[in-house]
Length: 488
Image (cartoon, rainbow, N blue to C red; front, side, top):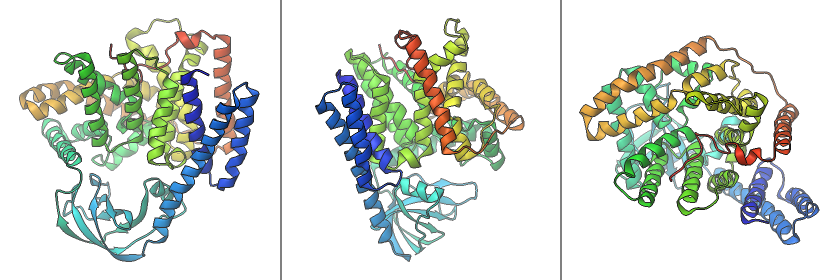
């Protein structure tokens, strides 16, 4: 077996064990899929060594999940219901639409999520004491979210006393101060609604949006605009690398680019989609720099492995993880199928419109069941709305990034850039509000069997396509323009 296929199989087996264990079954039951995998690989002609290793790694994945989950449950079981706790704020506090600020407080008893009044304003690295009652995660969707975040309890409006400031990681503290400066610059350069929207798109936050605008984002199906995804990473990489390559050799420019990208991912809160996109981009960049063969599926598996080793609960409990990976898989493997079915594979791509249409439709089809079951806000007009904004989104992100950079180093130039970015923001906001009014909700109740049948149909279409056109996998775009990074 080639090395790239062996890597894919081994990592996939380990990830499958974690996903299987996260369904709530006992560890002993993991022997069943492990035995099935061992037998299936032998039947397909693989050596017993590879088959045994894959089965063993599936068991290892299950064991890792149970160990990690046991550590978390032990913390929750020992948590007192009330008391005074000392800790340090480990994230950038956010203010919700209810006016309350919330943050993660790392204490001796575990990570707590604290909600308190908007004043006094707390910051990353503040050491404080919080006294009050603690509510442990409940067995519902929000409780599963807290478990995924490794939060052992919640404190609502506790009595807080500040001990000191300036703690935590110095680099993160600097990044969060930089983030605040960018926000203040946007507020000075743009009208309030445009400043809030651009900052939300650039940093993946939405707490500065009005309640009505947040609802319009949901109803229009354009909530993804405030998610740090592959498109954000692409624009960042191309602009930063394009600037650095004028002053540095290509390899040094590449390494410095991804140091900056890593800092950007940290700045935006280590989002799942941001980490996934940056890992895939880094793998693609390394393959180009050193002449290696780039395998998108291996890069995707590597990104999943990095995320799951850090948090074993995200495959099942993190909807963002599911949406991010479904979207990338659909772009890599289902977009060429759509191009064939719609007879667009031989058509010219005017201004990238064909690529935009195919990417948007493939992602919508792949993620629709998750959006319907988890959020109940899927709109049949979301496809048209997505195409209308995706065609201008690279320009919005590019000018927004330049605005952020120039606002920090040369304010007069930032003022000039603000005139260019303002009409782009106005256009996207117009599309959001328009399609919120034109929304056509489609949220039927799907059973797990219906969802399985839906995805089996998509998989069957892909099998039909790649069996019918075996060369298409080599000739079609395996990675879209939003996910394929080249540093030639």
